[in-house]
Image (cartoon, rainbow, N blue to C red; front, side, top):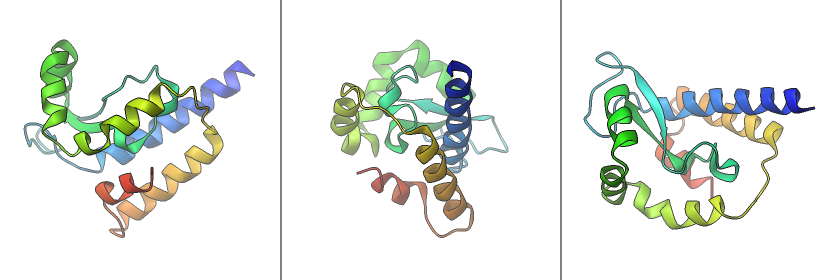
Length: 133
């Protein structure tokens, strides 16, 4: 059972990261995916399962900015307060403390659908984040 759950969570993480990286550029420095490796950078760490794959809980950052903010959490906090994430932070923080359980199969289907819509140009990640409400 644990291996099955671990595999489902890994699949959700993979799709979630793809969705976040559809931004295509670093939301901090502006480098594009052609200039640097893009990564999914969580606001509230991945270890917190209720918000692990919440679209409001991650930025697309280049590897350099992701590493910098990991090593400088106070600077990351300042960055968050000056971006779209500030609008969602209180809700995401409360959700992170809720103990809410994810239905991983449903979550994977949701993320796949969002990814398809973004790739087809039918939706942006900013619009998709509103579906989390």
